[in-house]
Image 1 (cartoon, rainbow, N blue to C red):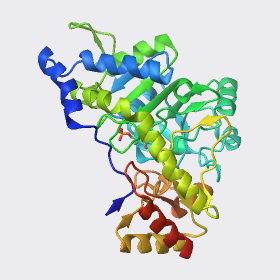
Image 2 (image 1 turned 120 degrees about the vertical axis):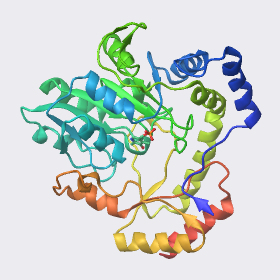
Image 3 (image 1 turned 90 degrees about the vertical axis):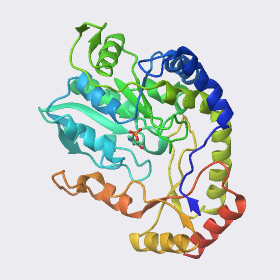
Length: 354
Ligand SMILES: *Cc1c(COP(=O)(O)O)cnc(C)c1O
């Protein structure tokens, strides 16, 4: 069976050697040595001034909304993972969906201004498949209307834009280190900001609001990463360049053999991480046909992102034409370390026939 992705597991003895340090310390949570070491390594590896490691990539979105005091309406994209939308709803804000660009697949920045009202306080956009949003244009709009910007950068580990970590854009960026992402800690994630005051808020929000043991700065929840997660991250990190190179080979193969299909258009000046390979079919009927043909031979691509988030059961439905159309026609093909060329050929041949 060939799934859409496979979790990379480092040699178990390497994980255990790192884990034994937590055992020796008798300390497995509350920001022990391994979480701090992972944070330091990621800071220098990614080129970011600050990072807070978290227990997943969803709580950081909620924490960011809270720390930036967003209320009222938040402008967002319907073409993302459900966590982007659910975080806004969970924080009692109102969703305002803006359609996406049909080629870059991120929010269409030229449509944002028309969606701003007196109630708008922020923009929460996703760098879809690790492809940066038009961050320059979004930044100008945010300044003009005094809005805060959060980027869901769950897919963006290692991505740079204009020579700088993509995590350095916006007021806050978040990442996911879930097992299906290119760099992972099993479950995990991170918060990024360049603003020191905001960093302080994000930090205490992620740790129950604590100010020492007996005092509190304010409201918090628990989004701390554990030592067990950090140990996995520390044992995966040395393989990141290898994982990226392997994915690059696979995606280069797809790009050559599936040249006629609509593929992701990367924004100029992006150094990408080869995290996903989506193809967009001319119709949903063609997509379903292709998916069935692949499934019949044990290949399981994923409809991702599908459905468009404006059709979630807890969202008041309003048509968002491009996002709905793309969602219904997009399929992510298998990309993972160890995926063999014979199988890539099989996938490409089946798609070419259709
Ligand atoms: C994976 C993902 C998340 C959620 O991350 P978790 O670590 O699974 O909580 C959020 N947004 C996007 C776009 C994602 O792909």
